[in-house]
Image 1: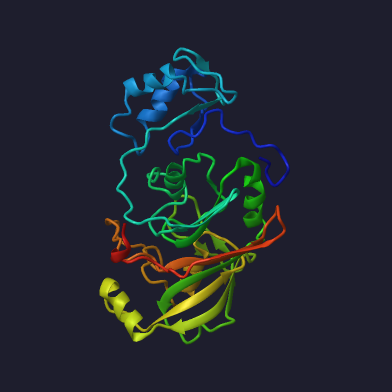
Image 2 (image 1 turned 180 degrees about the vertical axis):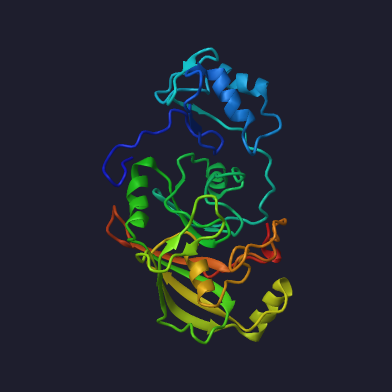
Length: 335
């Protein structure tokens, strides 16, 4: 696999195990310099923010016995082996228990190179933070038995819709570059309050910045434009659609379905642009204000859905199109 710069990217020295990729940690500078592999891994595991209650000293030693603590070259560490400052160590984490996400991830297309699914809201694209096993990547690896399944791009955890994965390492880089180089035509559907000033042809341009660790992204006035969103269509909801959504979300102003075409892919771009225009997306817990930290309500997902992907296949030269009409999930669509 090569990166966009053409350099060869080294594969991890441990294989994917039960759908989970190995983790890499690097020994920081310490007062004592080098430490034993056992001391280093014990510190890493016991200080995890989201740690399985059974991931204790005995579980750490069991990793060494199985040869599952290795260097970047795949050499197995013994517990007493010394690890130098700046050296990498690879191992498997034991995921902490996670609440199951009660929605399916239906497959829309599957061939020798690609696996395309409709990701539900609340399901992360790939493992991160406290969401490890309840992610589209791990679910699909376990479902298909193919441990080489890797996302070609990402969707926010709260955004539903089309998500594309590669199925072979040999093709991974080419499809990922399509998204990195903005060579994929993407369309989204959002449900939000009907706003007279948002019409087909409206284009929002701004500079969006998101600080790591902060929940919200922000627009920086006067900074170079890095986020562009075009409104393709605005359709007021029917009385029946309005009534159905109000049954879950409570009374709402007149709502509309917005078809959005992001020309760029900044974090939370559509959510922030819609909010700044006076039409925050229904069910958004981050914009315009961050909701209280309470258990998630699966009956009121963010009404933002990736509905369309189109691109020229880098291997065949053919035009590929994937679409879905489902925008958001209701309680009745749980698995």
